[in-house]
Length: 165
Image (cartoon, rainbow, N blue to C red):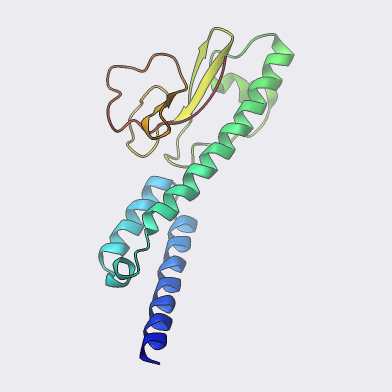
């Protein structure tokens, strides 16, 4: 009975912490701000550590998926732009202005996505959690989706990118 009661209390505490994650996500303008807030909350909670829940990881996954979805919306817009004009734009601003579409910002940083044209296509990406431009490189995924990464790309490269060509 005591084990059951202990598990129930842990579950209830976990549920409350998860509510805090959702509230942080809803209240923050950027993924970076939300994850920082969740990290501070987690430091103050022994319960989170005792049940082995990575609340930061949950929030980061949410924002990474949101960034990938936003990148797909941009890819659609870039393709429509190319069909209408015959080439990809020089900047992302040209896409919004030409199509008149409201396109999403980077949910992780709250700013714009980075974009580079290259022969036959482009790379568009978020700078990710390290807040550095790694040229579309993400070492966790073991691939380079952009052109040759800039020299500052290092062990922490974590851009979230979509490329064509």
